[in-house]
Structures are given as structure tokens and as C-alpha cells.
Amino acid sequence: AGLPVCLTRPPKLVLHPPPVSKSEIQSIPGISHTCRKTTKKQAKKGKTPEEVLKKYLQKVRHPLDEDCTICMERLSAPSGYKGPQPAIKPDLVGKLVKCGHVFHLHCLVAMYNNGNKDGSLQCPTCKTIYGVKTGTQPPGKMEYHVIPHALPGHSDCKTIRIIYNIPPGVQGPEHPNPGKSFTARGFPRHCYLPDSEKGRKVLRLLLVAWDRRLIFAIGTSSTTGESDTVIWNEIHHKTEFGSNLTGHGYPDINYLDNVLAELAAQGITEESLVQEKD
Image (tube, rainbow, N blue to C red):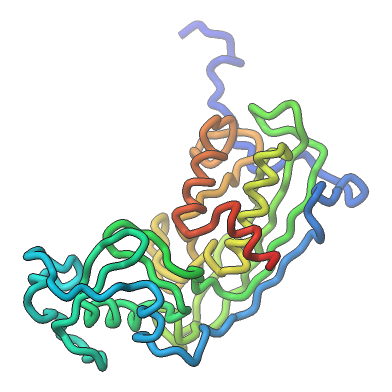
């Protein structure tokens, strides 16, 4: 088209920063340690599903003539759940205390039994979380530190680099196919945040998500279609350092706010930081 050659070249993908020596790597101000490991945490035992739900529910003696959104039967009729029968009457109805949504107790117990059984409950209608939600992330390591390079759009600060490493292994009882091996492609995975006040806040919350095993899960990859593999779990990360060709890089003025909203949807907010200290 008669344009200079430099204008006709396609933009270049920049996944990683320039080489960084060990002496240039620094710990993050206000955050202790530079590495966090997780092992497989067992779900809390000792409480029956009925005891867990009792904490979050009020009984409804005269339910409205509307559907239970779990079994889709009328709340005024017995639960339509057909699976393994919980030890609770199928016609009992309860209201979740924070959000006010109403369900058959029978259905809620069945939903709890099909989940992580960690003492928490998530409303199937509005996703309000009761208790502390945990996930099924396999064991691994999360490293985090500051490197002396700036991200596009954040020229006024250095960069927080996060390195996730999860090895392949065998699925546990909480995973889709217990006893079957799982793969872990693309590890170690490098991710980036600006070393700003808000970037450090996101990192603190990501550390809570890591400890609660919520950053990764085992499932089917949306990019390759491979099943029984480690996948991201609804908390988006930036894996491009110096470009944004795939949408996983900078500049992106909305990213930090978006990831804070995604963390909140998993029950992780500034309040969680206080809980973790307690």
C-alpha cells in the first residue's frame, strides 16, 4: 500500500519482561514472604448437611405458590428431587437469611451433598455465599515478587510478577474423576499486576483465593478441549507482560476493578483479609 515497512509489520506478542537478575527481584512492600504452597486440605468434617444449613436458613411454614429453582416443583408441594434421598422431609421449605431466596430443604441438602461439603453454601439463584467458600485446586506453589519493569499503562510503578506452578497428579474424591490422573499444561504460568496500591490489594486477595483453593480447578480446557486438566477458575489473570494481543495483557484500565469483582463473586473481599488474620 506504499506505507513504510515499519507500519506494515504486525504487532508483536510480548509475553515476558526483559531478563531479570536475582539481585533485581524484591519482596512486595507490606506483604510478608514471597512464596505460598498449598496442599490438599480436607473438607471440614463432623457436621451433617442438615446442621450446616440450619446456620443459614429460616423455616417457612406457609410457602408462596412459586417454584423451587432447584427442582422446579412448587414450593407448596413436596420436593421433586429424585436422587439419593436426604434424611429430611421432602415438603419442608426454608429461606436463606441474607438473600431471602426460598427452596425445599430437601433440594438444598442434595445440592450441598453434590458440592465441596466444606461448610459453606452458595445460593443457586443469586450466588450469595454463606460461610467460607473453598475450591478443589490441586496442590502447588505460588511465588510473587517485584521486578524493575513497568507494564503498559502503568509507567509510574514497577511490576508484581506472580508465578503459579502446579504439577500433574491424581484426582482426589473432590474432583470430577477420582483416581484418574490429571494433566497440568503451561506451568509455570507467569502473571502480572502493577505494583501500585490497588495492584497490591489484588495480590493480597489472590493470596486468600490461593489458600482457599479457588484459582485453579480440574476440568475441560476451553482452548484445547482436553479433559482432566488444570484450568483457570473464573478469576482472570494477565499473562502478557508487554502487549495485549490476546486480551490477557496491558493496557487495560478496567482490569483491576474487574478482577476485584470476580474475587468478590467467590466470597473474597477486604473483609476476607481480616478473617484470614483472625
